[in-house]
Image (cartoon, rainbow, N blue to C red):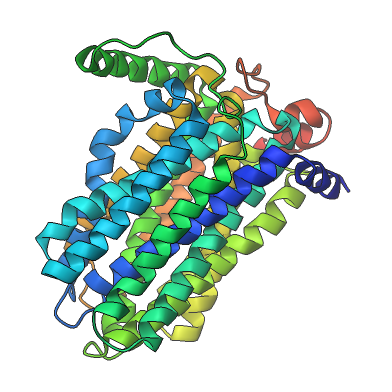
Length: 455
C-alpha cells in the first residue's frame, strides 16, 4: 500500500524526524500555554462569563497578529528558518516565564495582555516557519502524507499538553501554583524545542536563496509590503492556492463560531456557571472530541488521496463535516454534541490537510513563507469576524438551533462555490519549486477520479 511505503520513507529521513520532534515539543507547549490562559481568562468565576467577554478575549488574542502577520511572511523567506525556530522558541520560553512573574506580582490583569499577545502571535508565526521548511527535508511526492501526519500529530500534541495543563489545575491546590504550573511547563517545552532544532544544519530548512546584506528597517518594511503584493499576485496567478485559502478562511469563520459556542456551553450551559473547574473539565471533553476527529483525519486522508485529489477531498470534508454540525442543530445533549464535534473535527482537519498540500505544492518556494503567513492571517481574521458575529447572534448559553443551522448552510454554500471555481482549473502546470502531487504521481488515478467528481 502506497501509504505504508510513504510512512516508511518519511521515518527514514532524519531531518524529518527532527522537524517533527520540534513541532511536537513546541505544540505541547502551546497546549500548556493555552490551558493556563483559558483557566485564567475564561474559567474564573469573575471573568468572561458572557458572549461579549469571550469574544473580546479572542479578538484581543488574535487581531494583533492579523495586523502584523503579513509582515512576517517575507521574514520567513529571508531568514534562515532553522535559526528562526531556535531563537524564537528561546524568546517564547522567556516570555512565558515573564508572564509567570507578572502573574505573581499583579494577577491576571491588563499588564499580562501585551506579553500574552506576543507569545500567542509567535506560536502562529513558528507554525508558518515549520510549514515552509517541511518541503526542504522530504521528497515532494511524500508531501501529502507528511501534511496528513505532521499537523494532526501537532494538534494531538497540543491536546495532550492542554489536557496535562488542565489536570495540573484540577489537582494542584488553589493559588499561584495552580495558575502558574502549566505556564512553567510550557516554557520548558519551548526551550526543549529550541534544543532539538540544533540537530539540523543552519541552512537545512531554507530558504533556497538568501538575500544579500539587508537595508535599513524602514526600507525592509517597504520591501516587505512590495513582497507581499508580489506574493498575493503569485497566489492569484496560480489560482489553486488562492481558492484553497479563501475556502479555508470561510470555513475558519464557522470554526470560530463553534469555538465560542463550545466555551459558552461549557461555561454556562453544561456546567454550573459558578463552578469554574467543572466548566473547564467540560470544555476539555468537548475539545477532546474534536481533536479525536482530527486524529481520524490523519488516518483517512492519506487513504482517500489514493483515489481522490486534494481539491475534491476539500469539498468532501466540508460536506461531511456538516453531518456533525447537523447534530448540533438537533440537540445540545453533551454526548450527542461530542459525537457531532468528532465528525466536525474530522472534516475540519481533513480539509486543512488538503489545503496545506495545495498551498505548499502549488506555491513557488520563493513565496511559500509569505503564503503561509497570509494563510495564518486569513485564519485569525476569520476568527475575529466570527467573534464579532457571535456577539450579535449567540445567546449567553452559547447554543442556538438557528445559528447552528445557518452555519450548516454556509458550509454548503462554500463547498458549492469552491467546486464551481475549481472546475475550469484542471490540468494546471506545476509551480516553480512545487508540484501537483497527485497529478504527477497518479495521472490516471486520482486526477481521473477528480474529473469524474467534478463532472
